[in-house]
Every structure is written in structure tokens, then in C-alpha cells.
View (tube, rainbow, N blue to C red):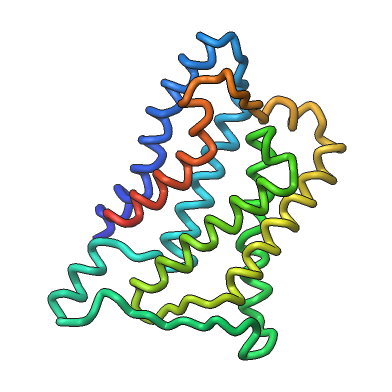
Length: 206
């Protein structure tokens, strides 16, 4: 059990390292400098994503589905609430905001396009929707529109904190960021989305 858990936690780091090798080669071909700080914060990003999916939100996984199958329990467990704040403003709403703040902070730290507000909000909303969709296949969890709102608010606050701290750590923020243009290779364009894709897939198959 512990062995499989460790493998599940380490696999995304292994895969993103392989991706980074190709990313580094591609950037050199395009004469684009990517500093080590970018890779460092990238590993922090994937650590955050793994802890989020494995420990915080309880994202569905293959081993859990196999256990449900042996117990003749359904895999699909829809518990949907489409009314915002139907149970009032609970402490879980605050926790959802705090939970998503690193997401909104790390996106603009790593990529220039997310230093604009709208792309960060959209990506935060997409990641939140992935989580809420996953709750449909997780026992004891619920898909709640309130969570979607609070998660998005957390991403916005994280982005605002970055905008403030960027002025203090100007040199660091310039070394962590990668600017992606239309002329760049596909691997560079896909980098912001590979982190979430790798984490979701690794969590599902664990």
C-alpha cells in the first residue's frame, strides 16, 4: 500500500522531468533561455497539484474503483448541488479559497500569458471543473457550484498576491517566467497544461 502510494506520488515528477528534458532542448533550438528557477517552481507546482488531488479533494483513482467493484458499490456517485451557498457560508468555503490560491499564484510565476487576469481565471475555472467532475466518481464527495465559485476566487486572490510580490521580487519573477509566442514549438505551448494533465492521469491510474 505504502509502496504504491510512493510510486504514485513520484511518477508525476519523473514524467515532468522527461518533459523538461525535451523542453530544454526545444528552447535551445529556438534560442530561448529557460532559467533553473522556472524548473524549480515547476516542481513546486506539480507537488501542489499532487497533494491537492491525492490528499485534499480525494480525486478518483483506479484502485478505489477496483475496491468498489469487489464490494459491489457503484463507481458513479452523483451528489450535485447547483445552488450557490445553499448551506450558508461555511468554513469549507474559506478552505477552498486558500486551497486554490497557490494555483493562481504559481501560474503567473511560471508563464507570461498568465500574468494577465483572464487566462488565469479561465485556467483556474477549468481545473476546478476537473475536480468537481471527478467528485462524481468519488464516494462520499459532492459536486458543488459553491466550491467552483470559491476555487475560482482563490485563484484570483493568488494572482493578486503575485502581482503585489512581483514588485518586491522583480529579478526572481523575471527568471521564473517563460514567454510563449505563436512561433514557439508545440512542446513550449503545451507546457502550462502538461502539469495538470500529468497529475490527473497519474492520480487516476494510482
